[in-house]
Image 1: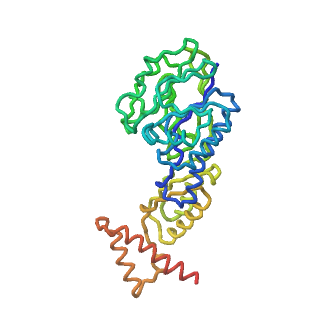
Image 2 (image 1 turned 90 degrees about the horizontal axis):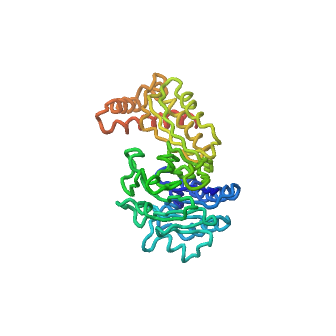
Image 3 (image 1 turned 30 degrees about the vertical axis):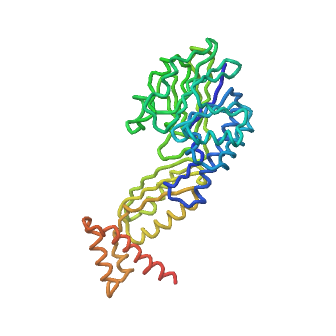
Length: 377
């Protein structure tokens, strides 16, 4: 019996700039990617695995700092299990790569960087890992072509180890580089093909799996786990167990709201985030037409929600103002303010006018300044 942990796409050093959150908030997400490596190591010890296979994109890019390299190596050094690291498209092997720097820093003996296609034999000869390291970001030849010709012991299970897109098995939007035959496991007599690159956990072909990233890093993604794979012997179907290891969960919310009752409608959407809020990363898209008074309350509700979650990316540009008579009474129906209000309302209703969105925002801002702020003085 051979038991391995299959993981991939750690992308240590990922910055998460696309979330547009304060840097101190994003720092927790970056640290979370180191912390999950610790949990993977502890899981490997608890489950007595023979090796941990990291199928590419260990690092976000080859230019990550030395401190991050030392942190990752320190974590792996503490776990007396072989760690097999495969170069992927984010960290391809080549001149001045992150892998050269690791060797200069000092690679722990239990960390194996697979820079060649030569099989590595572990578990007392019972496990043969066939690596397909990437040497550049985009490779047009199938990196696993050589698996078919690799000869290993008849008594060893054969595990392919690669990073790329499996042909005919992923969404049309999948990257069209580093393409891998969807019959590779069968053609190369593999007992298991451990893949990286696709960030969701997925069985994509017989004996062929993507582990996904162990810490979720995008919305609508099925990740946050690793795979524990048990291989009873050559030719025997593997037993694959999916084990949660991630800390953060990402939620995408789309709220269509309308006055009256818009605030309560928004709260109902926000309440669907039921996990511990401190570990939630949320994208919130709010649409609809609301009164000026409710819009002000909505902004407060969103600000309070942001304070309870790890990261909130809120989009309210499609939330248009729909002033009520009460709103206009609050603003004043006479004098200069009334003229400004009518002008802004006219612009805001003219969808063909490029200033329409700005007029709506200005109307809301006028309400906040004229009514709410003045009323609190």
